[in-house]
Figure 1: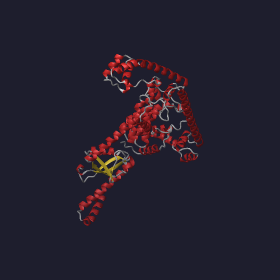
Figure 2: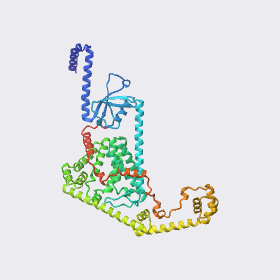
Figure 3: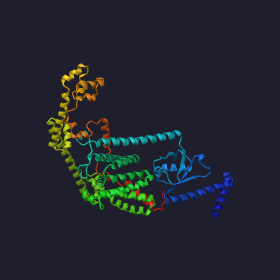
Figure 4: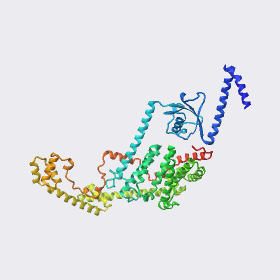
Length: 566
């Protein structure tokens, strides 16, 4: 240190005359440069070992206790700018501030490293003006309102779909059918079916938003899906993997949003996902193997599960547990990572990228087996389409046969639906309801005889009102007269309309909401939500593993350094 002192003294004496400054002032400046260099060197070493960067903060003048003293902040760069804003505001007694880097305002939601912030970056801290603060609050309110509207529209759209029973023409009135892995419709109680359709609908919307990197909005929809799943029976949830996949997606959004406050909830959700997978697939995935013939495609779900568990263990400070789980992840990743050469060969045979990726995973990387698997899956989907087309043709032929017997198309379709496609049973339903409706109609019409109508007309009432009043009072002239006097001779349009003789009013379907009278707004909502339903039934398994690869690399970097958990 004495050598450095004499070296600084020599430099100060040499340059002081040239700068026309006192030797002491030049010496002080040189010492300051040396101290900054040492601090920078230590900062570089700290960053290499712990990923904790040192930022220089350029605070507002009135916020600095000593204008000559520089202000530094140590932080990781994989945190959001909002977290740094909160720290600076708390430590320096500031409110409503923003961070500026190289003339650009840092986005509060995005991470520092994504916005070009590096170790030793100089970040300017500026107060936000009242007008800017008001605009910021307005934008946040608009975003919140937009999210709420999106959730409401999604709920309304799938609510409409959940109330449709498939009795209408699917070309003009789309409906959703819940099926098993083979495409066979499942018989589910109506209340539970509605909740399940809403749950799966919110989940699909959330996944679509996740693909667009709108994780905040996606999380709102995924949590709504979780609420709807809670209305389904435990037996149903344990037999399908949808609920487990939803839990994974929710925690994946927590990770993307860096919502550390949801750490405990994330841990419990991952446990629920793992338990559900075990019940659904079997301890050794034997049930999955029996149903689908292989387990390769579903392994990406376990990769994501173990990766999230590793991340949570690291954040909680359990590095040994995190390393153990990460080793399982790396083993799975090595097996499931797409082989570009094999992918290219399969795509050259006319298969899509999705088919190639899923086929290789199903066949454990065997090229020939993958080609066979993809061809078999294509054939199964085509056979399912043919069965659906044949089912539709048979249905239309049955409706035509019932219409030839004098029934309307709508009544014939609904009766056929309630008869599970049996024409004879549908005819019996229509015949019984027609006879009941006719008997009711005869009773009401008998009361409104021409003589009684004339009596009311003589009293000055209109014919339509007189006939309606007699129908409503069972033909009692005195009661009909009193009804008309009470209503000043004017009955509501609903009361003026005679009861329909249509069989649909008495069929069992009258207990369910009718989808035939959907408004243009309803049709728009249905079309909107249907756009977000993945066209491929295995879309949730078609992970490219790009995001997982980035997180694996980050986890390895974290765990190979001395941890400084933040």
